[in-house]
Length: 88
Image (tube, rainbow, N blue to C red; front, side, top):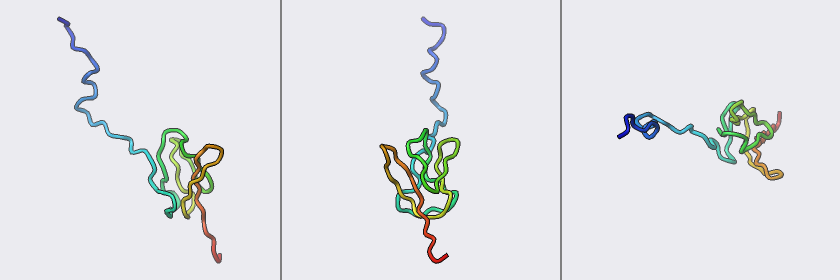
């Protein structure tokens, strides 16, 4: 008989392990406001385009108000925000 129980099999049992809530927060064609989060991701799965910034944890956010558009260029996914400056 072993004197100690095997460690690790119950290491995560009984604790509240939640997901990190990653993924796309706004779909394409939707209107966004400045500072709103577009996606939370680990690494650059989607790259920032026009009027989109990237935080240090790879979170993409809107820099200006407008409509969200996705595009592909050279095998990479980009997200852009097109602003309409009509009459100003």
